Length: 291
Image 1 (cartoon, rainbow, N blue to C red):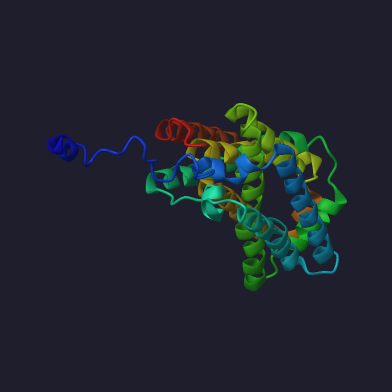
Image 2 (image 1 turned 180 degrees about the horizontal axis):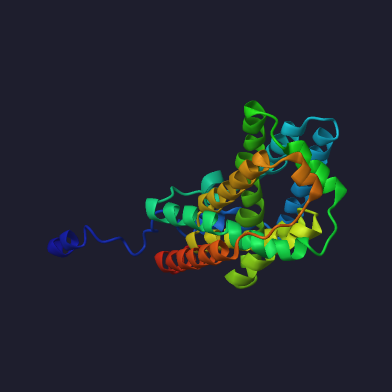
């Protein structure tokens, strides 16, 4: 009997719960302790809608009072980041684990950078098809002119809002929250597409909706395959930074004219080939889906 006990010292007791799982009386633990298992889908979607409406309201309040830089940064912080942090307080997982913030690895990070850069020309070419169908929207043109940097300091302040805050808060809302709600009741690919479409509709400008939807689907796929929100945030930030640099270099006359010039076909096809290859490598690297 003593020898048998000694042989079993390293094995887990069949009646002892595994770490992180809890026993019969330990209550919900692990995945079951997260908000996505504690709160009804409809309530979660209502919460997301309320945060989005508050974001629009605060952005409009700052924007129409001439505080352009603040309108790009503060609304996302106070209407999405803070409310989601407070919501995560109801979870035993904590904010980072609840919303899938994990340490990125070098190989996947490199692929995400390639995907984000390679997506620019194909998305621009796709979007240009639809932009030709609509007359330029005066309000949208006015908004673009208002966020065009007026110097290095202006560029830095606008970049904080567009590249940093927007990438974090929009990915947190549409990928880390809405997409995961959809994944509870439908297949992962369908959830990625629906979240991407909602993401595009939130931009309220018909000519750019198809292109933004394509971007949203790419960002959603990054999150779906890796289960790490940092990757979709990184892809979003790289894309926004590229657009901001191009806006900074564009003349105001070009913006007002709103002339749609599709990117070079050869470079677009090359970028598309790189994009597809990088997505395939990502698919191979993260299989099965870690979510």
